[in-house]
Amino acid sequence: MVLVDDVLLFPIHSVLWIFREIHNAAKEELATEAETISAELSNLYMRLETGKISEQEFAEAEAVLLERLDKAQGRGTDAEADEDGRLEEPDDSVGQKIA
Image (cartoon, rainbow, N blue to C red; front, side):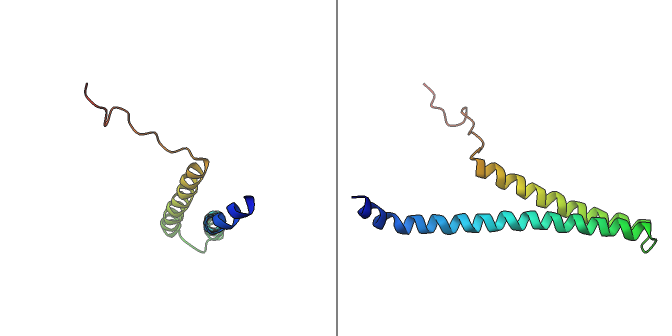
């Protein structure tokens, strides 16, 4: 019986495995993106300290990089919350039957 179950459920397990691998790759990419942006920020600070860019150029570039970093970290936080299974509970007041 176990062998029959394994044969019948193999396609489902395979698809789930593929989705898990895609999810892990996406998480890894998000982590790499945040590290890359942090490195770009460090490089930007170094260029400011050495006088290669002006304060105005620094402020503009920093704003863009910080916005990208916030978005990347926000996506990572959303993905972690979904992974933990903590989804928002629906509002019980909506959809209640009036007795």
